[in-house]
Length: 250
Image 1 (cartoon, rainbow, N blue to C red):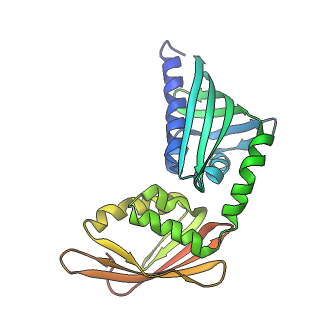
Image 2 (image 1 turned 90 degrees about the vertical axis):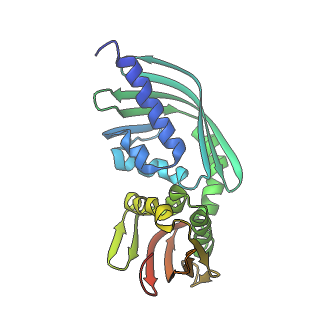
């Protein structure tokens, strides 16, 4: 431990908080130790990076905006104490909860290895669970509509937000498996589209858990690409997308 340890501890904690605010699970995992433990005291902890990512994804991916306001903080060695108000905007409404968190950091790896959050989960769950239940019960057509809106806005993180952690996006010749791989693919979409515009036909429901949408990409030079996407949805999240192209890919 050196005189620089407290500043590295603070930097790592606040990089994690910024990653959480970005809603990008790849960024969140970047600042989590592989053996991280996250506990909302006194409830059982989530153990390991994957379990913690899954815990956070439940609320991050359904939020249109996330902001964790730091009210006060103190750092000693590799430990930080952070009093926060965690704010989530979901379904057009803000939901906030007051937290006191104790963060333990591996300053060598610049990752967070332990979080103990002290929060009134009873009050939080009474407010948030009805919203989460509503989002989880959405028909496929509604979930797909939210995804298409993100595509129109060319927002890669929002494009990936409604996909499950183990979802598969299947395109001709390649499958993207898992949330991170799907998000990596969506990162390329704005550049690949350039000045072209994506035009969607009305969403066609195929029962409650599936929906299909035809699309066309109109480029300024007159070239166009088209195809059909078929989505499968479970508990409000896209679990599978099959893209069929009419000709070459864009």
